[in-house]
Image 1 (cartoon, one colour):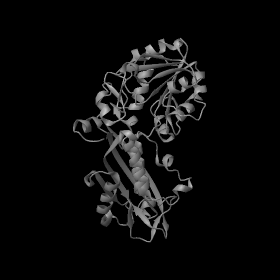
Image 2 (cartoon, rainbow, N blue to C red; image 1 turned 90 degrees about the horizontal axis):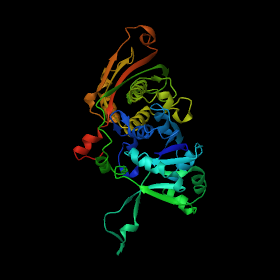
Image 3 (cartoon, one colour; image 1 turned 90 degrees about the vertical axis):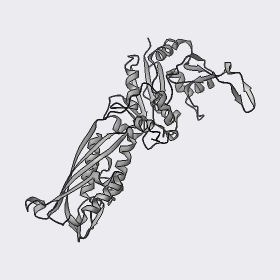
Image 4 (cartoon, rainbow, N blue to C red; image 1 turned 30 degrees about the vertical axis):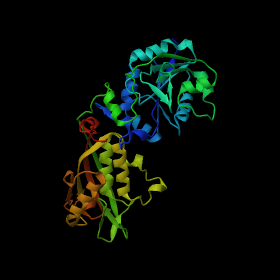
Length: 380
């Protein structure tokens, strides 16, 4: 059998899914959807190489899950596929969408078995309902529902996409080139996840795991005279602040690291490096809000957080209640799920000498339970 590369496209915005959670990051058990799809194809043993196309931000995180070839997508499906084609050397290329979650192996084999029949092999389904175009009925026997994955001769597909014309799939581009397209039987099991109700039609997707994920963060900053002090997003009434590239909110920085640690997303220096001018004097509450948004988009929810602020000075007891409610609002959780403890260093070390503050934080995450939301009739 001629070697075949698989390309899975997932760089779209998922606007029709209408959820703060990206559909490719819904979890089946402890596996995000994009990985679930890739592993199903991989398990067939039919592909010499698997390429995942996604956004640059997601690719950074995806690489923590698996060792596929990752390619940054473009502004359109066709642009994304063109980027992937630069990494394809095999005679054939099979292209599918990550949203096509439950493609059965038998369908994949039918497509591959027909590879010599045309430049593009396309799975289709018949139309069973009566169709009208405006006020005129259409002969449904002449209509086919086109599915993915589609198999193409690589060199033909590269030529077909070397145009400014945008096509919705590979078969359209190849047909426009005058090459032959061959239809094989598709499968209703290969339903595409487009809107939230489609999840009810995807039997291969399991409910998310109930496991908890725990992360730890620590940060230290020395004092700096004449700078405003911010802790947990709250202004502290003293005449000194923290020496830092950003506003120096040492508590929020420790918390961000705890959240990223629980999610397996690296650390604060990777997401918001202090070598970039964009983060000079940055408001740490905005960095936390961005971190929370990323975590939710990647299918995770915040359970609770706990932190210990070690400070010989300033005195923090009058601010703790406001700190709790401020963080709870930023995290989108109830105030009782935010715990803040303040202690001194018994006059030991740099903290005890009133030279700075150190903060330890712990965060607990869990997988977003999309299944429960659907069962309760809620939007995701």
